[in-house]
Amino acid sequence: QVQLQESGPGLVKPSETLSLTCTVSGGSIRSYYWSWIRQPPGKGLEWIGYIYYSGSTNYNPSLKSRVTMSVDTSKNQFSLKLRSVIAADTAVYYCTRGEFEQMLVSDYWGQGTLVTVSS
Amino acid sequence: DIQLTQSPSFLSASVGDRVTITCRASQGISSYSAWYQQKPGKAPKLLIFASSTLQIGVPSRFSGSGSGTEFSLTISSLQPEDFATYYCQQLGSYPFTFGGGTKVEIK
Image (cartoon, rainbow over all chains, first blue to last red; front, side, top):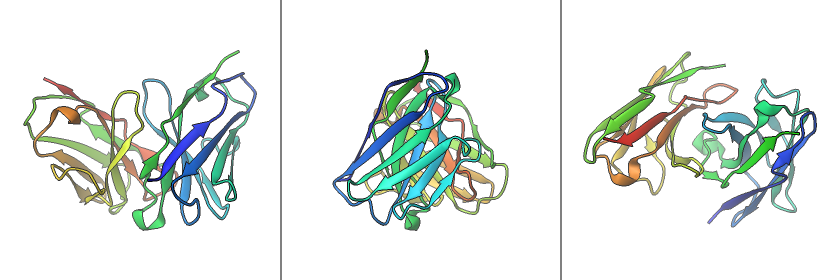
């Protein structure tokens, strides 16, 4: 059974960098697309982007200038960095898995981690 | 970006009711759509993809239909565990986007 687990600081100061890691267990990171999706408290879902296990990426243009995703196949992990954060970046951040044959829908999700941007 | 408009945004229904949620896309997306269910404090769960394909393990009372710009999720007989918020997603064009959600509550 594939499991995803987000990890990283729960509090980030404005203008600093949010850094999260997602560890994949119960399956390989290879041959899949790995996404980050966020949800501000009480609001809807926003797709941040994905990284393929080979390292190719696709980011949401609304965040592209501030986002970097990376993957470490040796550790079965992938990561998100969001620079110059503001209060509006406060959200639950989810990591998810997708595969090409299923249109890249998110079939497995981490439990989510709340990141609060505040001084 | 493709905008997805879900309706209704809130729905009050009883156990056993047939419920339909609609998602309208601002541009055609063929069948590149999905539906998720989210319960409070939990991650969303994939129900349907490719407009009408049921994800493995999802009860058959859930069904999806549509193509182009209009999609729907139907629950044929609402069960107590189905009270949740439902989101549609489009994967036909980058960036992928979600509808605003439909909260299904007990009448």
